[in-house]
Length: 518
Ligand code: CLF
Ligand code: SF4
Image (cartoon, rainbow, N blue to C red; front, side, top):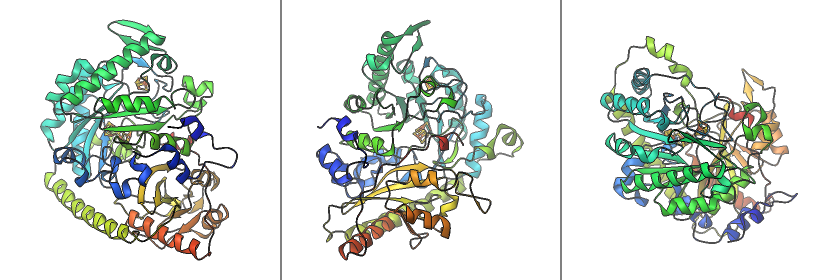
C-alpha cells in the first residue's frame, strides 16, 4: 500500500479526487467498492451482515451501529472523576478527552444520583437505550463508583444496555466484574502499540502504586490495553477501540494499531480527530499541535477499513451527555432538576417507541434498496460528497440556519455511504444571521458538492452557490440516503447533458471552536 503520508499530501489545489484515493488505497476495504451503500460493511452493517446474536447487541446502540444513531440516544453519567494516566491532549480540569471534547466540564454525581438520573431520562426520553460511563476521568480508575452505578441501574431498568469507556490501564483486573454485570460494550482508547510513539502522547501513568514515565509508561499501558482487549473478546464482549488521530505523531501508525486490534477481535474502530486549541490548556494545545483536516481523517479511516468496521459517526460527546448523538439535552437533566422530578419507569412507552422505530427502519431500508436498484444502469467514475441537515429519524428535516452539524455522505454509482459529520455554529440566531456568519460553515462543507436541507434562506443559499455548493430543498422531510442517491442521479444527468460541470472539491476544516460547546 502506498504510504499514507503520500496520500495526505494534497498540494495547493486540494486533495486528490476521491476516486483516485480509493484506487491508491487498493482493494479489500468496502470503501474501495463504494462502501456501505451496497456492501453493508462498516459500522453501517445491517441485520443481514451480522450474526443474529451480534445484531441483537448493536441494533439499538447509537455508537455501535450507524443506522441506530439516527433513532436511538445514549446518556452518560459523570461518576468517575479520578484518572491514572496523563494524555497530552487532556487537561484534567475538563472531561476525559478520550470520549469527550476538550473544554467541556460535566456535573459529577454519586452512584445513587446517577441511577435516579438514568431512570428520569429513561421515563422521558424513550429512545435512550444505552447508559455509558465515560468520565470525567477514567471509569476503571474509579471502579467502585462505576460498578455501583451499573448495579443500581441494571436492577431498576434491566432493558438499558450498559457501556463503558476506559484508557485500559486497569482493564485486565476488572474483566470478571464487567462480564458479571453484563456490560456488553466496552471502549478502549488505544493510540499506539509502539511505546516510542506512546511516549510522545503519554508523559506518565500511575500503576501498581508507582508513577512511570516516558517509554516505560507507554509500554506498560500498551501491554495492558491489548491484554484487556483479548480478555474481553474471549468473553464475547463487544469492544470498540477509540484512537485519537494526532498528525505527525501517530497518524501513519494508526494503520498498525488498526491491524493489531483487529487481530485481537475488536468489533469497531473509531478514529477521532485531535481537538486541540491553546485555550484548552492541554500539552498539545499549548505546543500548537494541530488536528487533522476532514480529508486527512477520511483518508486514514478509508485506509483502515477492510474486514474491520470503522465508526465514523462519533460526536466526541461529553461525560454527562444526554440525547441522540449530535444533540445534547443534559441541561434538561441537571442534578437539581432531577432531584425535583417525580421519577417512574415507563417500560410500555419505551417498548412502543421501539416498535415505531422498527417500522420506520424497515421503511428506510426498503426505500434505499429501491433507490439503489435505479443506480444499476448508471456507469460513472464520479464520486461526490453531499451534506445533509437532519435532527434525527433518518430524514432531511432540519433548516440550514438551525443546524448544529451537517452529516456528510459520499455517493457514487456504488451507493451512498455515511462518512462523518461537521459541527458548526448556528447560522441563524433568533431570526438573525450569527456573528460568525457563513464563512466557518463554508469551510466546514468545502469538500461537498451540495447540501440537502428542509429549508434555507436566500442569503445563505447565495453564499453557498458562490462557494460552488448547491443548496437543495426539494428533498425536505424525505429519507436521507434515498435522497442523496436521487440527487446524485440527477447530478450525473446534468453533467451528462452539460448543464453543469463536475468539479472535484477541495479539503474541509474540522471546526475546533464548535467542539467546545455542549
Ligand atoms: Fe458512551 Fe462511548 Fe458507550 Fe457511546 S459515547 S461510552 S460507546 S454510549 Fe459514542 Fe460519544 Fe463517540 Fe463515545 S459518540 S464519544 S463513541
Ligand atoms: Fe484525560 Fe481521559 Fe487521558 Fe485520563 S484517560 S488523562 S481523563 S483523556
